[in-house]
Image (cartoon, rainbow, N blue to C red; front, side, top):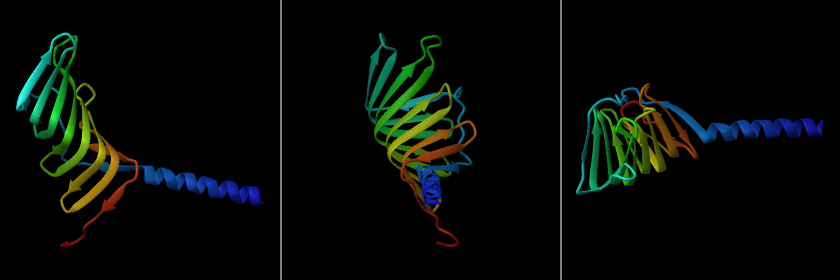
Length: 161
C-alpha cells in the first residue's frame, strides 16, 4: 500500500510540475503575413554575401504588417533558394509589439518560413493591465496562439483595476 501511495504522490507531483512548466495563452490579435513587406531601420548595417546574412546594429526596428520588433542587434538570414528573409535573430533589449500586446525578452528568433516567434530570457508579456512572465515564449503568428515555458508568473487585473 505504501508503494501505491508513493507512486500516486509522484504522479501527482509530475502533473503539477508540468502545469508550472508550460502555460498556453491566446494572443488574439497577433497575426503576421510572412509574405508582407519587411522594413528594417538601424544605426548601422553589415552584409556578408558569403553566409547570406545581414547584421543590423543600434536602435533596430523590424516591421512587418502590424508586427514591430525592436532590439539593439538583429541578424537577418536569407534563404538560399529565393533570397527572401528566412529568419531573424534579435538580441539586446528585445521588444515585440502589436496593437493589443507587448512583450519583452533578452533574445528573439523569428522564423518567417514557419511563422513562429520565440522570445527567451526574462520574458514579460502584457495584455492590457494583465501581465505574464516566463523563461521562454513561443508564438504561432498564423493563429495567434502561444505557449510560455519555465517558471510562469501571472497577474490578472480584474474589473476597474
